[in-house]
Amino acid sequence: MTEALPFEVYLIISNDKYEIYLLDKKNLKNIYKEEIYVENNKDLIDYNLLSSFLDKNIFKIEKLIGNFLTTLVLVIENNQILNFSIGIKRKNYGEKINKHYLESSLAELKDLFKENYQNNKIMHFIVNRYLIDGVNYTSFDEDIEGDHMCVEVNFISAPNILIKEINKVLEKYQIKIDRLFEKKYIKNLFEGDSLDLSVIAFKIKNGYNQNEIALVPKSLKKTGFFEKFFQLFS
Image (tube, rainbow, N blue to C red; front, side):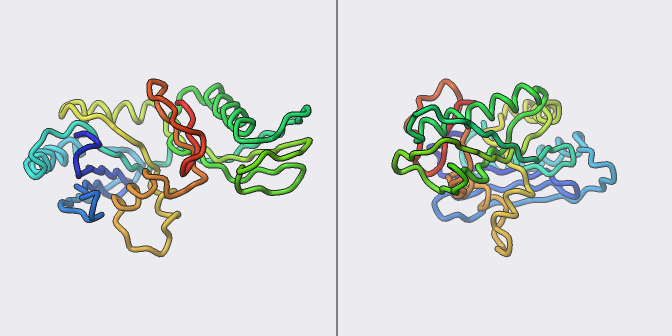
């Protein structure tokens, strides 16, 4: 399934249930939804049950969209997921502090994460705050004078082995994961709302949180630094 199609499929793997949604992107309504509750006291994914659940639903979804399903968005809840903040402080040597300067700091933080957590895949990369000489800024519309800049970001990541095992199940259906989201994070962004997780994930996928950095594949051309949110090569 490609981005050109008017539908997206969302698979949610939680500690207590598995869910699958077929979302009408234009109307933000689910035209198909199924779920199954699981007994899970050890925070382990029952891959046999997951495969059985997909067996019962993938064909029905493909029949509805009139096409083979090739990608889906995965939303996951798991105690193995890492969630922590990290900051970096840089001294400025006469440069203007601007978007390019900030991008360099963010790339440095991303590389620092990858160097120290090589067995994890970044799911979310969020700017908590950035300060110049102790003053908090929310945008970089103009060049800013300053001697020091501090950037604090939040990383949410999943073990590569966990994603690999889920991919093994999806390979049976020739389906790949298009995007990866952490359930608790996306639910907290819409706390108090009664939206389905598929709608929440769709909104975040399309730039709802302007402080979240989009990690785009290296093969894709970079269209601009600031559109709705940051973009860095993954």
